[in-house]
Length: 165
Image (tube, rainbow, N blue to C red):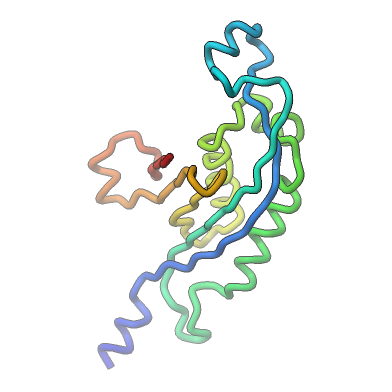
């Protein structure tokens, strides 16, 4: 009996992977060309370039004893994919997504945007982690920062932003 109770109180992580294509450019409208070149270096351009992004989304929760799931995998997948298709797939981020009119669509900013939007969509589930790959060698990860870790990092806002190149 104790094993049965432990099984359903154990927190697990469920992960899905999805893809989308989007274009962006590294420039700030309010800066002149010289300032943009200083800020973005060789990546500065007023012209967009695109990526085929890979997005990995993980949620945490306990197993529901009635259905044996944290959440129905297909419902999770439908929610994430509907959001991606509606708001990001085949867009020029700088112009078509309001957030990126005010934030340069770097991989870091895209990840932060996804963290906020997907977190809202999935409530009451706990969004545990997202990892956004710009290509095979570059990704950014936002990860839920639990209370114990949060005490160690004042002002972390409840998540960690990790980057890799």
